[in-house]
Length: 280
Image 1: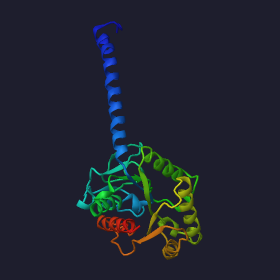
Image 2 (image 1 turned 180 degrees about the vertical axis):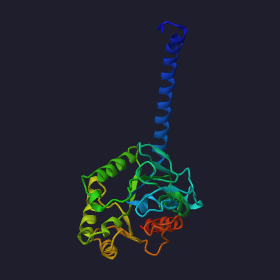
Image 3 (image 1 turned 60 degrees about the horizontal axis):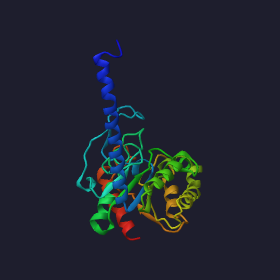
Image 4 (image 1 turned 45 degrees about the horizontal axis):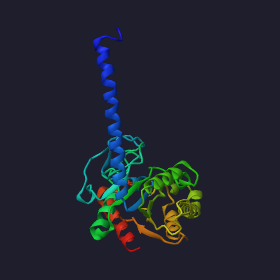
């Protein structure tokens, strides 16, 4: 076709217009992001493995043991509803209105559902409206062990990067919400080393974020993937690091896979985490 044909001429005329539209859209996105960024006053890191990423309402339809064919039921209880005063840092490092599943673009190789993050934030705002806008920074990835969160590793560096991005317009990191350890119940060696590894993790996080007294609220295991749950739970309770609070999930309702908390249990856990934070 002749490049000077009416069709091609029309396309050439449209190109500058399309570029203007794209530039205007990019500018709008950037402006909207900066507006949200400036609103965030209280930042909370969510890290660990699947039970803080959220599996509430996730159903495995597979009949074969060890095979996952999962979907999320999409049920969002009142305690987990979106709130204009609760934002989340997306996988693309942009502040957006938070809604379940919080980890959908972070824990990308798993099916995410309801976690404790939204009930936590909603409870904090309900009990203390003066807190202002809350920014949640989801970082959890299902099935990960404490060694995969070791300083210098991919997950650790991503968490630090995301947290620093979250504070680029100001705001304060108020706490790290940490729920992990199920994967470290598989071997006796990992269970015995858990306390030392977790203490090192907490200390490095504070050092690398330059927040030496950053509050940590860790969740005691409700379930396990191996036979050494009580050893890991003991290590969690005996962490010898200052300003670490312990919230025990044992006894909360567990789903049919005997590993993941149900939606109702995630709501309870979120409220327990809020209680612990508000007591700090």
